[in-house]
Image 1: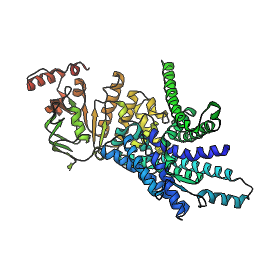
Image 2 (image 1 turned 180 degrees about the vertical axis):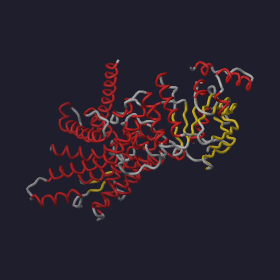
Image 3 (image 1 turned 135 degrees about the vertical axis):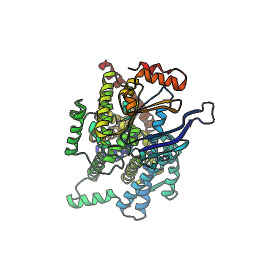
Image 4 (image 1 turned 90 degrees about the vertical axis):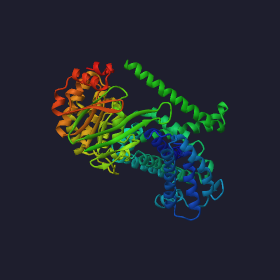
Amino acid sequence: MIEGIFVEGLVYGMMVLGVFITFRILDFPDLTVDGSFPLGAAIFASMATSGFPVLFAVFVSFLGGVLCGAITALIHNKLKVPSLLAGILTMTMLYSVNIRVLGNKANLPLLGTETSLTRVVDFAQRIFGTGISESWIILVFFILLTAGIKIILDLFFHTDVGLTLGALGSNEQMVVSQGVNPEILKMTGVGLSNGIVALSGAFAAQYQGFADVSLGQGIVITGLASVMIGEFIIHSNRIELLTLRVILGSLVFKGIMYLGRYYGYYINLTPNDLKLITGLMIILSLFLTKWQKAQRTERNI
Amino acid sequence: MIRIDSIHKTFYKGTVNENHVIKNLSLTVNKGDFITVIGSNGAGKTTLLNLISGNLFPDEGHIFIEDLDVTKVPEYKRARYIGRIFQNPLMGTAGNMTLEDNMVICHKKGFKPLKISLNASLRETFQEKLKILGMGLENRLKDNVGLLSGGQRQALTLLMMVLSQPSLVLLDEHTAALDPKNASLVLDLTNKFVREFGLTTMMITHNMHHAISYGNRLLMMDDGEIILDVIGEEKSRLTVDKLVAKFHEIKKRDFESDEVRLAE
């Protein structure tokens, strides 16, 4: 059971990395995520069930997410609307698009379809023998996958374009002064974020064994709660630690949700209460952050 | 170098708040000029700089940089030739990033490639350049810029701007938000860099003494127009009293901004 929590934390951890990029690095609160996460799942499911190669399906899912993010950024840039509204627009439209992608269905099972997980399990059992438990193989696979994406992101944020992306969130004028088009930079950043989110969606579908349009419900809030929990764990300005704490935050969040789901009935909680709890957790984090800040300034005076 | 050809700018056109801030303004900036710009609040100094940098576009008229018509060129494209420093020291650097990361972003203008430029030798170059400031910043490459004081941040912005070798430097009261000690430090550095690198510069100031003692050319603006343009020999003979008298002579009214006289 414990490995289940870890796997979920890692699958969703990828998504939280995407949310972290928009909310924390770009300072571009982006709600597209609620639509790009199920889009990734939908693209993967419909492609995999139609017999496309698994890796290719994963790659197209990623591109689909990038496109959604770019559209949100484009709406924000060209029509000068707040990022929140632009995100809600794209997300709403994506709901219809996702149903289309799933073949006018709300749900598409992956039973019997080859996925990256079935392949990895086959591969591992051929090498290490069939005695090895499937769930542990999947756990190791997701550890490697999430770590790989984290490391690629870390490297990206050390490149010139990555650093400039980092500056965009804290000082747009500086980026303009350096001769960089902020609109294109925003499209790059929001696109990258949603690409990762869609990738996470594609793997969530493979892990759960189906793609569903409602998969994205509340994803932004889940991501935000995980980001905030992570911020209590580590304080740093180094990107390696920032991305690490994002993943840790996701693991802790999934842990808390697990406790709520399985032991919540002792205090009369039902799974329907989890959204309320997520919201309350964010409010609590905001309150604690504010309180911590007040403490720090008091000490300085 | 820079030619401004009868530009006009009106804010809130067609409303009760209509404000004609720049009126038929023409100006030629020569290569190597160090121009100080002075004038009371609302004279249009900052608007002029915004028009040159491309932050705003003129309603009429044209702006040329090196004979290139840039009237409609967006700010980020012009920024490759123009280095600008604002009054607010926070505007030039990203506070939540380290000093070295800030310098990487600024060490070359324009397109940012997908490659990691920061290495030991670049770090050494940065440290060498930071030593010029004499603020000990060369030992704080890994610190967030947000931890620096306003004066340090403005000096850093100045240094990074100079290193990008702009054709034109626009300084918008860049020492006004600093305490007197840091203000004079940053101003001295500015003067030093402008001379050493022969930078073509326009500097807005509220301080008449600074306007007179720095640069080779002085512009006085009032009500959207340049009412006085003093160059070279004539400028070096200016005094605050002469300047105020001149204003009175031209506008037939007293130079009203006490702030300008008192800022010493």
